[in-house]
Image (cartoon, rainbow, N blue to C red; front, side, top):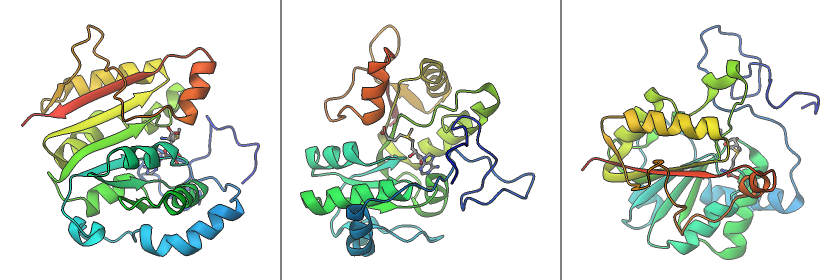
Length: 247
Ligand SMILES: C[S@@+](CC[C@H](N)C(=O)[O-])C[C@H]1O[C@@H](n2cnc3c(N)ncnc32)[C@H](O)[C@@H]1O
């Protein structure tokens, strides 16, 4: 894809990268861009993809069959290049992680880490997380959801593409087990405020933070991400939010 497309002003594309024809096509939180794949990523996709990338199907996922054990499951939306996902999965070996990412080089990069570090507790969907959630994640089944540095869609007219909005949060909550958590992080303050407002207004969620500003201290298991490094260098803040589904 041309480099001349403004990241903040993309054309309306559907998930396959085609120009959306249907005027009422669902607004998506991402734009699929062709990215250059490294040779290691290509090799990882070919060799490890069949084992760790799950096919999207419109039927509920059997976690025990997928992971070969019974363990709490955490769902991550938009893992990017997957470095933090791999690190968290190694820090928390008793938890199984399902990560969704539509950007193929990112999927290749995480597979490469899984292979190099021999990480057994991650599976991947290279598919829209919203559809995976709708079609494959059983309601009430998740121990947690991670959304780290989601695309901020800075421009006012693109704000509608932001993931964290009341209907989507209600959908996430429906898929959490009672007591399950939502952990969000962003370096874009207006989005952090939106997150706090939306999560705070959901009747089935409770904020775990005792801080006056409502944000959470970064939990130890979350490493700094690439985006966070960049944000901090630019002098941005970083805001974590951790809410739990009422039990
Ligand atoms: C700004 S990046 C952040 C990546 C990573 N979490 C990090 O902190 O480095 C957001 C990522 O979310 C992915 N994404 C956005 N909406 C998605 C969706 N509905 N399903 C799957 N991936 C999505 C994008 O492809 C992009 O790679």
